[in-house]
Figure (tube, rainbow, N blue to C red):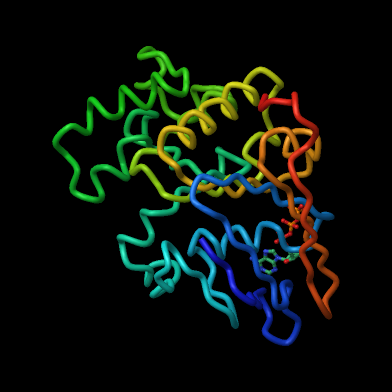
Length: 234
Ligand SMILES: Nc1ncnc2c1ncn2[C@@H]1O[C@H](COP(=O)(O)OP(=O)(O)OP(=O)(O)O)[C@@H](O)[C@H]1O
């Protein structure tokens, strides 16, 4: 994925991001750090094709993004999986965890095999069958976030964007979900953009970290390689 010269925000006269470029190679994990409000989530939404930049381009597998939000073509939209910080805001409260995980499969016409794939994904994220029939208000934040990660992986995305995925989780759920994402990345060759405030976690987890500096008049990214050898995810 390549983000080229992205200018984006919510008011064209005062963009949050100005001329930000970032590329993720196949299989690469990049951690995105920066002070609160500098535009990390905005950049994550642009990368996930959920927010149209005012200027600049997003390339996926060498192809320019042909639209954003509902205008993104299905093949490009499904190539990017997203996990947000708050599963309570992200998850439809009416769906069971099973339906939540299966929804992207059914919405893209993959009905055959959807039940098996849902069980496989649930197992991978550590959700037992007893939880799959429950709705969001009947499970913990950690259990719900596990379902959201499973859902994000359902269509085998080429890029996974995790925006503060672990911010609301305890240490053991954080470690478990980082391990799930890492296992998927290792097997699939997908790239990862992980946004967060936990520098220690991102420096251990990712191949490199980049620091976004907002500030209205210009935004810049500074790169740093992975933390010293010997550290490992989770
Ligand atoms: N939907 C929106 N409408 C208007 N302004 C927004 C919207 N979303 C974010 N902003 C503003 O854009 C700026 C950047 O927000 P963003 O969420 O991208 O920052 P961030 O670096 O992810 O912050 P944090 O680390 O606190 O999550 C902030 O000033 C924020 O108030």
